[in-house]
Image 1: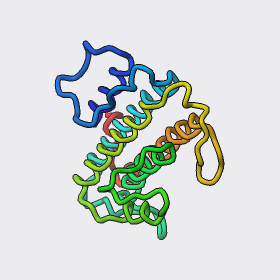
Image 2: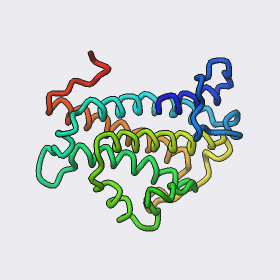
Image 3: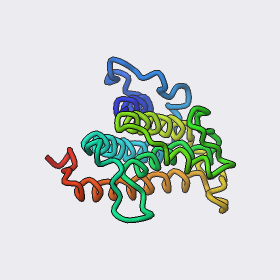
Length: 194
């Protein structure tokens, strides 16, 4: 997964000589040389978040995935799947529909809730996170500078596409912080702090 986003970023920067040996099948293609510079910066940031989120998802024991800090609050599994769901949903606001296999439909927000509530194993949650970050990176990489000011419906409010991608990035940081707190509450030290 991290190699997927790294591949996209290196492609964007046109540094083909430093590509990983095995390019992922879902790697972005034609539009990458024209990706808007701010989106390139956001993608670099998201790469760091994805590395940490996936690292936490792997570090938290499977028997803790149903832990929640209180009644009515998302469990660890639900937070991880919420991040994956929004990595599919938010690009849909920009015109890149979520993969059909996810069941996520922009016109049916209950589909997002169903996605988040699935009782997946830890390994399946990790795989879903990885796929979702690749999907998000590919969708964002299609954004050219001239598209940044195009308007999208951002949950009922018309906003420039640039705002959607900034909101997407800050949303990921919000849930990274939440996931760090969840992990530490369960005696799990984030892998990058060792």
